[in-house]
Image (cartoon, rainbow, N blue to C red):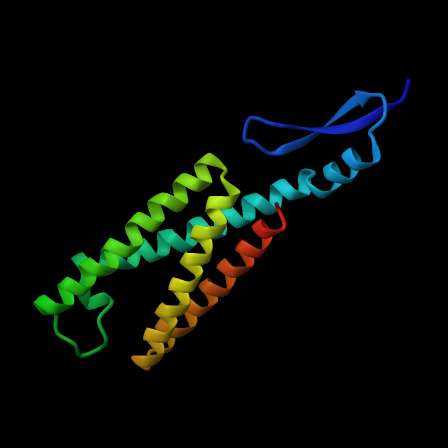
Length: 160
């Protein structure tokens, strides 16, 4: 009796290899090879990148509410208008973070792709704001995080 590998989900929802008597049909083997243990590592990487992205963005919006001097351009003074803009930033990023983290928890690749793409575009927009402010840190960091997020979405795109 020959044994052939097959895949089942472990407690974390990742595919793990098992041994099964018999043989795979050609299509089943191709499906397993495309979604085997390496696929799980890539999915976890994409989830980690997305979590990092939305948590960093949320952190900056929270800092903007409580310590605006850390995110305002040098020499700027906190005003009621800057506080209102900080509230708008928090209103945009906090729900996105909650939904993205829920998608990660539920292992919903389709939801994570959409939310991750949105989070990546938001980072690119934040980079454009940093460029307008002539602040290299507020330009490069969001652009790098946005590019990393687009990479994460491309990993998830290959999942379906």
